[in-house]
Image 1: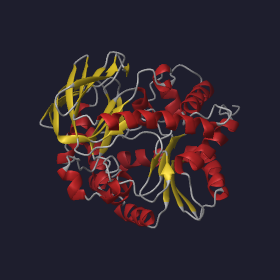
Image 2: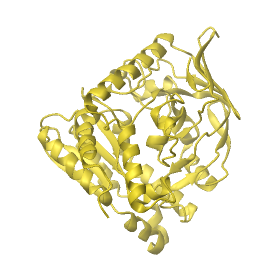
Image 3: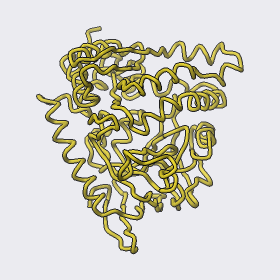
Image 4: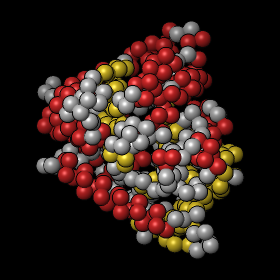
Amino acid sequence: MTNPIDQDKLEKLARVAIEVGLDLQDGQDLIMTAPLEAVPLVRLVTRHAYRAGAGLVTTLYSDPQATLARYEYGHDHSFDRAASWLFDGIGKAFDDNAARLAITAENPMLLASEDPEKVGRVNKAMSMASTPMRQRIVEFNINWNIIAYPGTDWAKLVFPGQTEENAIRKLAEAIFSASRVDRRDPVAAWHEHNKILAEKSAWLNEMNFDALHFTGPDTDLRVGLARDHEWMGGASRARNGIVCNPNIPTEEVFTTPHAMRVDGFVRSSKPLSYNGTLIENIQARFENGRIVSASASKGEEVLTSMLDIDEGARRLGEVALVPHSSPISRSETLFYNTMFDENAACHIAQGQCYSKCFRNSENISPEQIRANGGNSSQIHVDWMIGDARTDIDGITGDGTRIPVFRKGEWA
């Protein structure tokens, strides 16, 4: 089989990851995670990192066959274990100003046939053990970025009925298009895109809405916004002073909801791929910020175990706005990968809030975040709630309603 992945565009993706995604600094270390299949992209990223002056690039690889071996042969006690020592070390590296890059390529349905109870236990153990690493990311202490590589099993899931070669080629081109590396100068394209997202964020911050009201099919949801919340999108300045693009691709502007002020009901508009399991047709009802009932036509056991990880898992940590006309939505491709699918639709996230999404976030304490309505949890899981029929009103402090979205587009 000839290589179905355009090597020039793959090289551009590696360059964008270092120059735009991370803006890696001279002398800064880089910690990278990737599945074995993504080695070609890892090598290109590593070269660009050292050209940019990286101190040390350390890559941690994952292997899907090793993951499945645990479920096939592991004893019962294995499913409550996680490598806390590893996450402690990564947390220390972040404290020493290492940057973080994750490459995703795995089959989103890897664990779909495994015991949901065991999957839930593993997810809980991982969430608890990874707190030192995750906390430094959600607090935006360091510059970090996620990009994607067209893995074989992922490609065959997204493009069923195609030959393996064609499926990989199609997924690669979809990733390249969404990541804006199919342009002559992708770095310049990203700077222009970031400018547009910044303008949307600035308007929302000027309006300073007290709440957003989502209406659509099986959806009537009022999302109160945290006190002193700040909208963000595209490039953002981390607490270490470096401006980075955490997600490539990205089409969203997002902020922190008030954990105690979400009421109504909502239905997901796209499936959620969560740690190897597909969860479809989520329906949830919120009262006083908390999900009091939730169901799904597929993957409901995994959904329930996710919501029961801790108290904060049933409350929101993010609300994000994405027009239905976004390039990923227009592609009409379901990626089964939240990083892509969330950029096709407005979405909410269960769990941990981003402390960066507050005014004067450099000086805000965890106590102030809680007092302002920010949520705390071991998880942060996005799921999509917007489509071409979604209307959103912004509600000001005096109750005035201002159109924000009409029929899935900016009003």
